[in-house]
Length: 162
Image 1 (cartoon, rainbow, N blue to C red):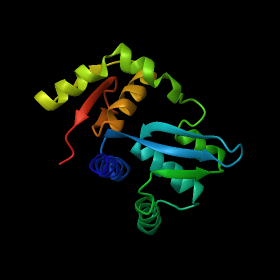
Image 2: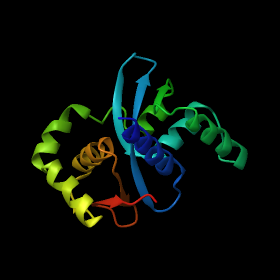
Image 3: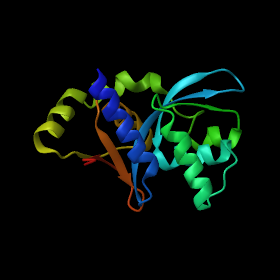
């Protein structure tokens, strides 16, 4: 569905460009160039941008930030390749396991959550970090952006982008 792909891309861009202490989750497809492994990863947008700064060897000057953002905008498919170990660690490449996605969708009954968001435009839920990323991933795949307040942490919240 084209609308859903556009929504995911816009949510991705919002997550990567966000600089507040409330971090947005996004989903990317990442390839580890050292092993050839490719997987979908749900992580915070600022971790994606940080990994790209490392991988592309770009500093955090306004020029370096502009270069990374231009690079991000060229990747509407949200697919990135990394060789640098620190960049891979920055996006939790080694820790994130997308195969647990179905279990989380069942455990938290994703369709009820989607219905709640559509009806109330609100969703907030406290859960462990590993489950939070998986639930954020499931919601991202359905076109919903979520985030976590880094100052307080622990709650996954729906974000109305517009």
